Image 1: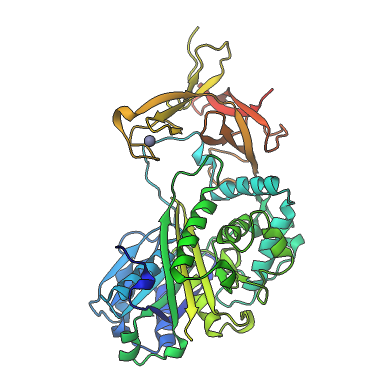
Image 2: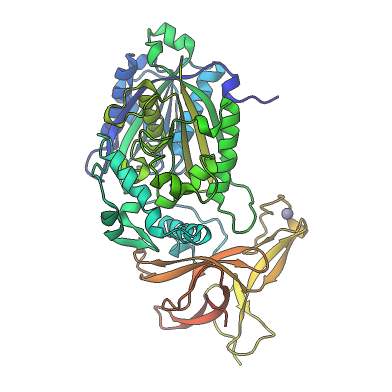
Length: 381
Length: 138
Ligand SMILES: [Zn+2]
């Protein structure tokens, strides 16, 4: 009988670190990644040789970038592997680091996401389409925005309020690429991109790094890590798209089934979630996914947003980091950075972004393909 | 009469029963399991994994219902100068397809009936080719 992560030995996040997400610049990826890893090691109060295995999430750096970065920590001989899974690369790296520790193969493992903006290269499948070259991600989500607004009879200007909330959160996050509060008028008045989407409703192009160190009880004991700051991973689920009925949004349907499995694994319900970090590359996605997660029925997301239920201090803080829209989406780091934000919140160390009494957090990413990864983390009591 | 040159002849063709300019039909496929897909392919059925004789070509009508549209304001690929409108149409025959609207100035709303026609384009080399574009059904 197959088992879930939560049925194996316990896994904890014990260290988190970032290099700030920023506009594309001259900083080499090696410097971005090392900054995040050293911050995570310092946070865990362990030295590099304690790390028994590394998972390097990167979508845009090309072949074998990890070792050229990790060698500057002191070449320990420990195994490393690269993970590419589109937007979910970081989440996938985190999952496999957790699996390695939960299985007992390692006691301490690293998930590091690092990326620079480079051209995306996708291979020819041999199957042509009518006009796929004309439908880039922002147009895919512009279509979904039009569909959501029409189906639920909501003004597209209300959908843009997701960006106002997430820019407000990002303004308080020193690791966010965009750290500026924006009014609804500023969001709506910005450069038009596709359909009703404006530039401030879309995730920015950027670069950066995020690192997370996971450990077993044995690893925590052996390296003298403070167990009070450890956050337990109580669910890890990865799924890929199936065939859904015509017209059903695959990202939302895939999210729904992946989250259901994760909540069952953690023995939690959606209403017990205090923190959610989700894939809001475009404003409408946040509404789709909170509805798929089960915070509210389909079409009711706008009402929750407008009453402040999704704010820090509301019923459930959604994207307190600023999300992909404000914190940014450098691809490889994003899913790892979500875990870091949830850990900060559950430890009560999120400073001006702190959501009160945060006990349970959920991290969600989708990646083109489509794939979906969901993790649940809980404060140890 | 000479057949017209199509930009993507593996995806659509002129309906042989139609007049000139002919209405297009889409080159879809059907699996023995009942799944209807677009475009036709022989790798294997996305629903059940069957291949070979299980997959047969299935011409699809371009008639359908508009699910969504988006006027694209920015597009990096210079070969597709913005603005242009993308439509997402649920075909009466099953699959959902996305491509360009023939005329950006045409006012369309989700729920309305759509169909496709062949539109002439001037290629860089000066040759005229026809591509499939959607229009509001009359
Ligand atoms: Zn089949």
